[in-house]
Image 1 (tube, rainbow, N blue to C red):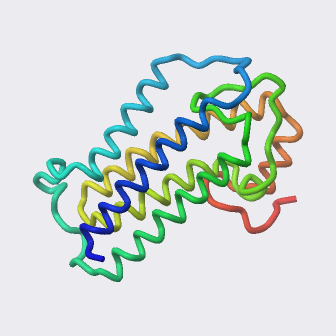
Image 2: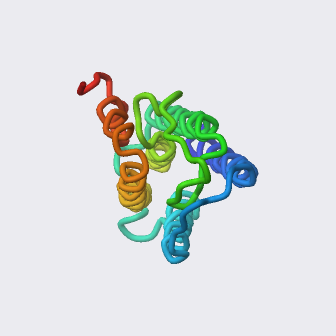
Length: 194
């Protein structure tokens, strides 16, 4: 497959990923806390900008349309595998969270701190997986717009993950400290700090 064909497959794969995410969002417990709607609107807007930068040809203007490295099918395939691996990690993490997942920064009724599956080593594996997927897609795109897309989503997820950590630390003070010693923030912790 060529670079453009790989990108087309990723476009369809990300679309299927999004449909799965919307369908899976229908299941879950009710929230016991709430979040300002403005945060959700801003996050959805950033997500829209991210995918527009990656897949809209018209976004390749000026410096954003310049190649980062000389085109290479080997590098494109590496990016393609990274993207698929990232989406798989995010889906695994979403399944592990089950009824406690939310697209908002909230606690669910009878919330539990999930520490199994990818959460055994990472506190935010959904974000890590999506970021790996975006990074892989950016590698396939091989233009500066991909770098900008990654930086925007990374900043968004960094802020969101820190806010989630604060909420979980307040709700599960002792258990969260222990979890933090075993699980990395966005990257897996390979050793325990205990």
